[in-house]
Image (cartoon, rainbow, N blue to C red):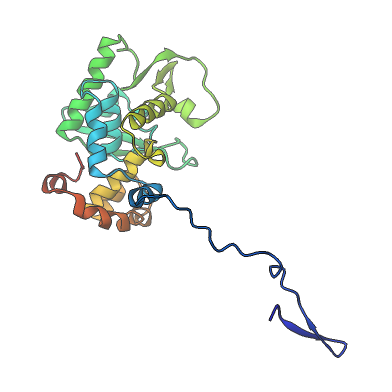
Length: 255
């Protein structure tokens, strides 16, 4: 039957199916000629596998400028721009604490929300490395922990342009950070869809949940406004759990 029957003026009519005259293509499967299991997985996943994460950080010397930036981004599950907003005064070596500004809500009056976190010994070493780079580049007057080598008196209209500029002193640009991350990702031949630094945030959440850390703790670490956002990672975390060795499980870092 080509359509739904109706009655008009005592006559039985047939409503024509608009798809009836269109040829139906059934054989639309594309053959690859090899088993593509990993390619299919890579297209949809948003996190790095533990081995990929280890290779990423092993690629950079721990004394380089960018190792501390990306390690802090990963450790605290930051968005790309958040490490750039760290000021020298946001670090307390005595209390071993750090202030991270979260940029989730544009509507907040200050343009960010501040969280205070403890510092792991590795974070302390990263901070000290960043401070040494400031001395080496003679940028001690710049208030940002990761300073730009440029000064700019005027700022743009977007909030990040304003936030990363204090009295003409600038933080390193997120575009520069993105470019460096992509260069490393390409060198490591990571899947194309994982060649952006937000993958570090996804990976941190996934590995923490896979290692058994409570949802509420992961929520606070990543700065999620509600725990439902954190629970999005649970299904993926279950699939990763078997790939973590005992050392990774103990640390919950993947490094």
